[in-house]
Length: 264
Length: 264
Image (cartoon, rainbow over all chains, first blue to last red; front, side):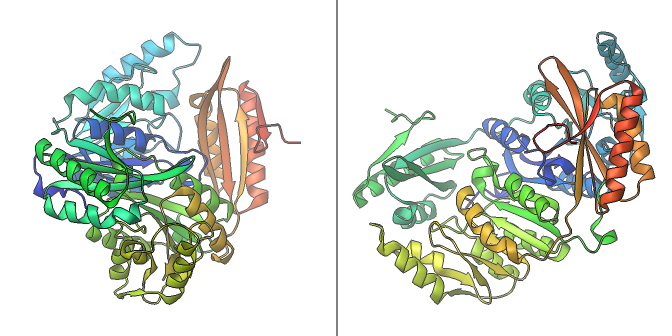
């Protein structure tokens, strides 16, 4: 049971597209979905889906178009480096029906960057100054080659450290999300024992979403129940009902802080 | 540049669907895409895309239908536990237009399993014996609650250890993939320096796919060039050409084993 974008117009929606054969082959393990999910959640932006797709131009075009139409924001990761399999920019430009241009400011930054290295600013690297026409640059404080924004699509690199550094520069400018209240009730019992309690509370407290996540620790197992909602008062009230009902069932139950300590 | 499913009919294609709000909220980091990607790659099955979607019935139905029609195999992860947000089975049944039934053998296994625990086999847990009609069970050696196969869709749980144990039981029965030859050439230079070499070799050796992955180690950086193809001889030949050309450019280049040691 989750929020539907349409029924809560004030929460911006987002999708992530990870572009890269190396993720699909298993060679590289994706870290960008989880990291961006955390960031978007903290900004009150609802991540509705994430896709991992191949380095194929027609697939990238179709996916970017579909998700750009369906959601408020789209973040892509990967495929903007200097090599022949870096085709994200060509595909994103095609998705928006604009040409790719050599961007003077991007080129200036790259020339300045490579002057400070012993690497040649050759034809392959010059490709990183090519940007879809009408896009605006996203600064890259680590390795100069910029990302960019076109329409509602944010094009970022695949290397996690660079993606993270670049995201810091844009996150202040994202459409302000409404921050959800999120409360965790830690329960010393299996989720199968409290499933009915959770379903009942969710049915009664409209707008409060409840997820349950089993965990095991040496000596015992339990369930983390996470309640989230736009209405802080309502979400807090629902969390207290869950706590009371689970205790009435005979298990321990406490509202806990992010570090797992019991909230006062 | 990757294989297109249609042009190489002998390679089975696959998609992964990770179902879970907890992944999209960032609370849980997905490990199943990377693990399954490795397994499928080793079996010679081509993973063409992966999606992370919400616990919403209509989204699950649409996604399962779309991917089941597009690819030879679909693997889902998550949403088959005992709680109210575990709606994968209802959605998968709807995607195949069959009812959900209480499966006698699944129920028998669960009853036997819970007899050995101090947990009650209550209504919520009984839900784990509900399976789409016509589906066949996938054994769960860890916690009894089975997965299942319906059509070309393999429904697995979200908990990585259980998913992994269950996958071991089905992988021998998957449509035999053709195992790709995969060769890594480690090069002591940035990918921007060898981009032209790679593009030229890929253009010349039709059927050999080349990816390049920059890496940094203390003291130096370099590029791992991965060549893969159906034709072992052709792929090996292309790898040797890459090695020779990169050496001619003035950098070190070696074909390496999976552990990074130089191959003999």
